Length: 417
Ligand code: HEM
Figure 1 (cartoon, protein in one colour):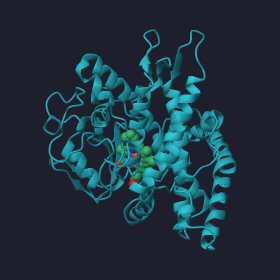
Figure 2 (cartoon, protein in one colour):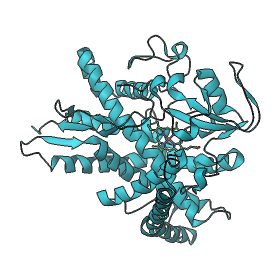
Figure 3 (cartoon, helix red, strand yellow):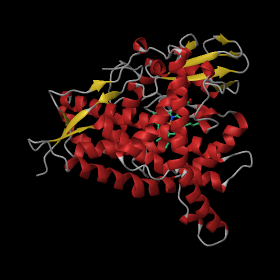
Figure 4 (tube, helix red, strand yellow):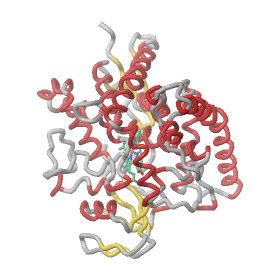
């Protein structure tokens, strides 16, 4: 099943914003200096943001400086260390855990919607610099605050009665306090102690962890406070998990369906170049983040001639732009891992956005060619190597959402020979 632009039900907060679906217009909006981030800092329905002042919300010079600082985490050396020291051992731990829990009939069944998510959240916590997110309960606790924040940001609140609304806000405050006390506070204290030892010349820069909180300590700005490190870390965890989980599940479905229909391509499942193309094509067509939001500062005239007045909310329908036949060729609604995009356009189109806010974690997700494979390919190829397949009487169940993702994605692993 695909999410086509026609399926797309937008969240209520943006339902009446200007919609852009043309490839050239979309690129122009994303790169325009007259356009800023769309959710804004003013909370709808009087509900405060719980994750605020982070990179994805900033604009202009402040954004550029924070982004430059955090980009260090995605340089080839950092990515290689991350893949070797965090990603691979965590995946191996999960495979062992799945294999240790056979069904009564000896088969191994795993709900990848849950398991891949947990694995990714733990991987993301390492990048963010949040320690102690190891057990399923701890993962669920961190996930809960991200869910609440997302709910408030996108505005799924207005249908609530006043007492219900108040209850959600109180819950969010309480959850944030738990996160501060249990996770963010101790993680920050540990990094501060290491940073002080580094400043005192007792340890080298290489002995410091490679994560968001440590990078912030190394470039501390007097206007920041401890809560900002918490917000920044949470935003990275949020940005890295749902997106990657969707891509892993969608890509698994796409490639297995593809080789079932094109058995001659089955040997290519062991070929990184083919998997990379299949992942790019999945990202293009399955709309991991099906829309992005922006707001105009001044008047903006788009390549199509459309004029957007100042202070207007814009919804960029990425799924539509990513199906432009002039860019992606014939039958753009079909999945085809052998597809080549026009010119210098990458196969995933606008799946990682474009312009100053384009995904900073793209290389962590889909690799740096010739250097790292990226989280998606590493997990996908592990599933394929483990002989994972769908279970005929237990098919995947889609989440009721405008996003193509799954609540339930059961796979059976091949028995060990
Ligand atoms: C397949 C996986 C991923 C997809 C499809 C994806 C997609 C995106 C998109 C479309 C944006 C732009 C949002 C906008 O313009 O408003 C974005 C931004 C961002 N992503 Fe990703 N992302 C993925 C993985 C990751 C990972 C692994 C990380 C971190 C390790 C990450 C961290 C971020 C951050 C911090 C931003 C904000 C950048 C900024 O505003 O300057 N993402 N992502």
